[in-house]
Amino acid sequence: MSDRPARLFALSDVHVDYDVNARWVRDLSRADYRDDILILAGDITHKVPELASCLSAFATRFAKVLFVPGNHELWVMGEAPERTSLDKFADVVAVAEQSGICMQPYSHGDVLIVPLLGWYDYSFGAPSEDLYHMWMDFHACRWPSGFQPDDVSAHFTKLNSSISVQGATRIVTFSHFLPRIDLLPSYVSSRHRLLDPVLGSTRLERQLRELGSSMHVYGHSHINRRIELDGVTYINNAFGYPGEERIAARGLLCIDQL
Image (cartoon, rainbow, N blue to C red; front, side, top):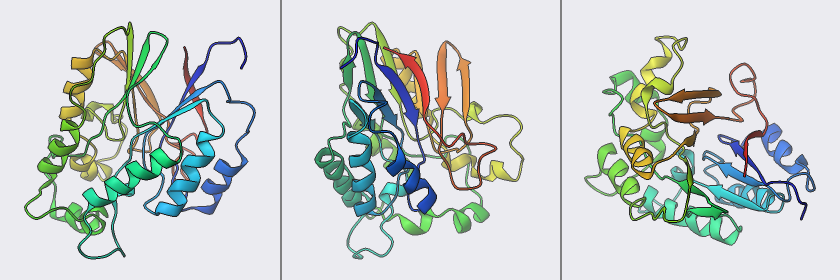
């Protein structure tokens, strides 16, 4: 261990289904980040073996890795028809634990880093028929009978309850989904605003405010951004799909020193 402060890195949307992305993870230095902490904000892959391999790779390179799954992790296409995305979530939790990855609040000195589970609930807008047809989650996720997106969002955000911030002088939170729609830059075209309803949930914003968060890391949009809104710094550092270099930095981002 060195005497320097631990660095806090953020990353999301690694999508190791793509060989070039998986290769980047494999090639990541095993020496440069041994004292550091990584926030991994979801969308690694829906394939359990690849998820385990990726999480294990990060766990061997960082002192601590904190993780929340994204929507891709909960896809069940090609799996047994009785399996739901809640069953898949349980599998993801088990894989994370076996890989040495943390999905619980973590204290580093007087800083508390809090993962916030979530889903979208149409609080950013009503979905169109075109969205129902083209958005993969509607075809690749499977929920218990009667579950609607609002029920899914409520289910996951309820799992974030009873978080104690006692002893912490600073709170950093993170989620896969966006906590507020104005995190989407104004330059995003109207054609892409079709996706607004499936980007996130205002429930997440309420939770991070209740916790007293001063910094929030999110993923999902693949649009890298750092902006302060109403006293909270919001950061997105998506690795993204191959070819998204203009909107995704495709690398680690140090967001703070602890």
